[in-house]
Image (tube, rainbow, N blue to C red; front, side, top):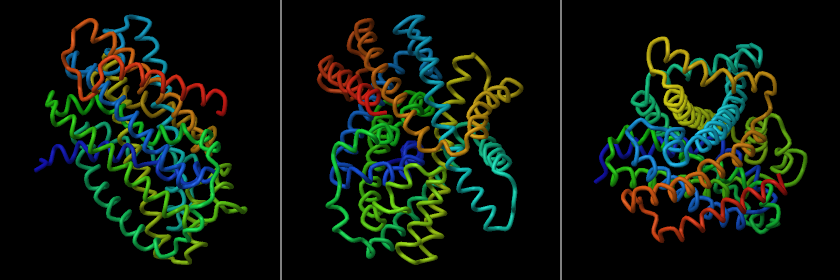
Length: 397
């Protein structure tokens, strides 16, 4: 029987994963088709979960509260610390910019439906400010808010799948071109980029390793199942080709609202449109909260700042101001930001943990090896996969 804390921790991972990445998947992988998408989703889940467990392994060697900067400094010295700073900041700021952009797209649409007309810039600022207050309250507040949102999100997700499924045309699943997956691999990777909150979860669970294992494995597997079902439903209903098809939405600055409109045109149901809008909103909020929490804790650890008082407010400003400025300058950065974030995910959440775990095992023997069988051979395989993914991103990005 799982206790409520494990459920809460798993929901934090699910909430961080099932966000903008889930909404972008049918659009990003439309050209590749459903079969190829499922194959690569499973592969990305496997390797990213292994990376998360390696991050946990390295983190357990350090005092609770340590984040990626401390981990890199202890295992790789000053060069590792610098690399971790740059790559981690770029990853989390890019993800946060994507979720602010995508969330504001939905938020401004909601305001317009309520006949509240404000500029895109002001709605982005308001959206960021409201939910940053929850992050400032700490992981416990994020946990409880996230639990409520997640139960609502999963409930609406099930309703959407049940209601939309009768409109599926299985013939649509037969289309697809495998080489097209190269252009969407980074978004698939980003969809499992939850490992940034692993150090926060370790502190929350007070070194309870069995519970942390369960949280990471259960929390990452559920998004995989949800992604596969979601891909099948959306690709089976919404046309791939055409001016409003899934492929065309790849170049749209309003991919989320565009997908809602296209889905409405395919199923002709206001009920589905309302549910989908609600689902989209919660996806963005839960992903926003999870990534924001990871960045807030990272900055507090790296800059040695307190999480409350004046220093806490400074940390909050450093967390949200840079990505908000990016979104204000370029509002339609959503899908492009997710692709950039995928490159950072590969480097920071796969390749760097492999190097840190290898160095840590040499320094401290075999203690705290968390659920990664195969020893250094497994580390080598994950490292080769990471380098291959970076090469694909370089060539096809």
